[in-house]
Image (cartoon, rainbow, N blue to C red):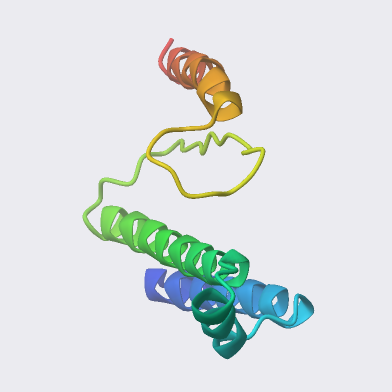
Length: 120
């Protein structure tokens, strides 16, 4: 089943959908309530949560697509790593928060160290 790259996309999409579906169900989120709160009482929390969930889902599926295109083209690297920074809060903005900005140099150091370790 998993020897075919297309199956990885299907399974990855199902897993991402299930995770976000459970999160939305657990938080009792409702798109109608999000729109109503945003338009009537100017409470944008649910609308922002929906927008972030959609953004994360799109990003995850695009990452899966990119990996499979790389594999089909024969250009998938043997070694891969994903280095992330845990944000203090998720919010709109045009620049990273102070905590994320402070963590970026450390993430870059980790990436450089991985490159050095993989290519001695």
